[in-house]
Image (cartoon, rainbow, N blue to C red; front, side):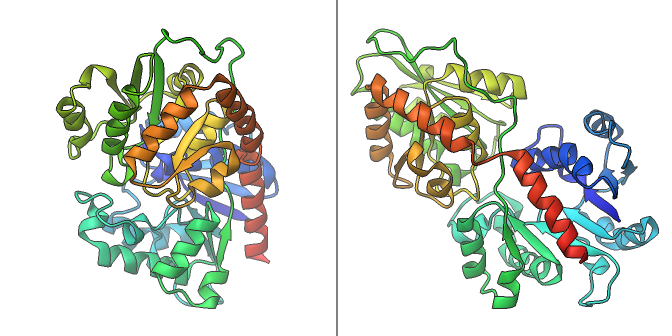
Length: 383
């Protein structure tokens, strides 16, 4: 069996999709030792860097593809490339596949597995107005529908995401049955520190942590508002660290901090390394995730695995992932978020309880389990 995995979705500064792809690359080859894996890359630097994590497996190889997975060249040239490779399975970790390689035929040689992590553009109004998918929502919808129709299996990260996919795309029962829920995980680099005690005094500053992009649906602006409200209710200083890639298209959170006079209490780190992110999880006091929707919510699991209490919203999969280990508030309600932040940070007993509950909850989400279930899907697909 020859499996082609599209690693072109991994960028120098990977988002959730890139993290997923990287974690699968490092694990699946040894779980399917009787198969040959070919990983596709766009740049030699990324190829060298990522293949170092899998080169101990004898059943892996890499191939340079000088065009991206969203390009017209990919649509036109990848069918011949997959045929030349002799691929039995093509796995793309995002919704876009080379459609011409997968006609509507039960007898085609190459099977296709596609990840659709969420359908945010279709279920969240004004989710990211300056994005391509927002401007071309009709094309995005058609691509999603076509991918589901032509894939042999669709993997998504939560029951909430599957439900919204079925509803927003009006899928038939046959199409719906192709969707398999496989939860994402959290890397081993995220672990609770035994050296950072929970703060209970009224003088030591506390730190809220946000991890993610600046797209409007993430509602970082609402979190800044919640920070200002919570500050008035707490005896100790409270600051916010916004961790994620800068995006000049969406300056609203910075503007709100200036407007409310709390700019000095908000620090924007930009993109950070895995090591820096792990340190932030360990040294912050509360993960505040105000997103209006998540298809999974990697940062919630990473925080819980790090022993960091979590406050999130009821948008999308967040209640499904967080369970009763987090404080869950209504999406888009800054006042409720502020109340939750103040309540959690004011109670050392509550924080300790949430820390222990989060550590236990995080055990349900593991990359090794995710990779094992994905390997099983490979086998079933060929059968």
